[in-house]
Length: 196
Image 1: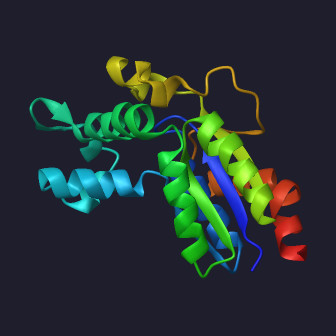
Image 2: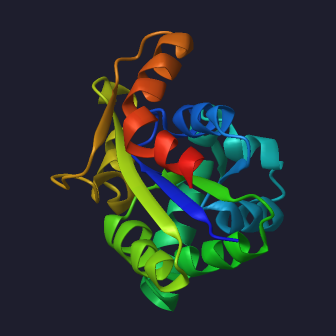
Image 3: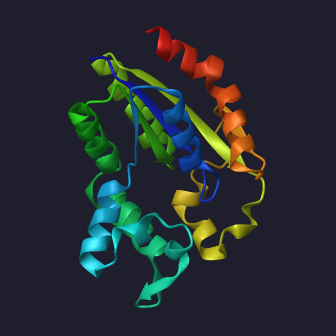
């Protein structure tokens, strides 16, 4: 089966997951995945934190142990350990193994942060497999919710200055965002996926 991979990039609280779920709702054979799923499972197991806390944007900002937040634990395991000590593409390689196993045709990754690995590397991988690849970023103008130390982490700054198609999240109601998403991706992605 020829797969379609969509990677949505953006900083925290930009609306990546909301966007991914909205796109999934527009397609019949799609699922949402995350590059960080193995990282979340590892942190949950190591520190005894419920998985639901890993996905909750408010709980991820609360200190859980050693004065560190869940987000800090995820960022450092994913970046400083995984990308720096193992391989820059470790999480994307693991994600592509999951794509091969998936029964759905369209896989939407809702947590693109590093354009070289999760964009360029995945694009080359998709080309080698004969799969279709799309990427875009979601930007939200109100970045004042990002804590200072978190905002400086590489996972929050790696997109700075990177040009790619962009969906602007105005921070309005979810229903309005979903309409904007549909309009944004309709001619770029959805029609092409539905026709193939």
